[in-house]
Image 1 (tube, rainbow, N blue to C red):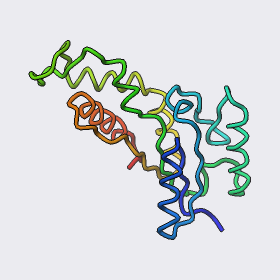
Image 2 (spheres, rainbow, N blue to C red; image 1 turned 30 degrees about the horizontal axis):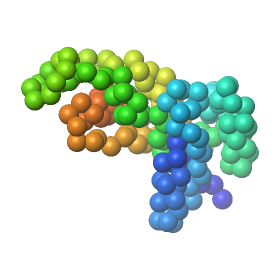
Image 3 (cartoon, rainbow, N blue to C red; image 1 turned 90 degrees about the vertical axis):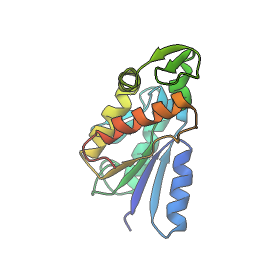
Image 4 (cartoon, rainbow, N blue to C red; image 1 turned 135 degrees about the vertical axis):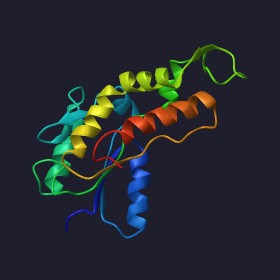
Length: 172
């Protein structure tokens, strides 16, 4: 019986898959270390769907999943995909120590604009955005963005990530 959804991503994908199963959906889950997603070591592959050249065992797991789904690659048959694939706010914000939003007059640091953060996210997550564009061309795709943290800079990063993800045609 075909899956109702495919969940891909880091360890959060397991929780999403469990939630779907608890609601009665048949979900297949492909997960790998968050570090492999945010570096990014896991990449889009035109035939398999995903591959990890640096770790052949990960690529083999993708092949195994495609075989289990009885299809040539994991993104086929219009099965919806839910992805949590490396838009880590902590990783993004780690490079911004000493920075503050220009409109946050209470914070210390070098002021930057929201446009700067948008450009930063676009640059730092270019491969991730490309991956979701390519997946969304094949199957319906929902991307789980990291949650805001209540800190002005991280919330602004969250907004920038959301704008970038939302700007990809076919992505929810």
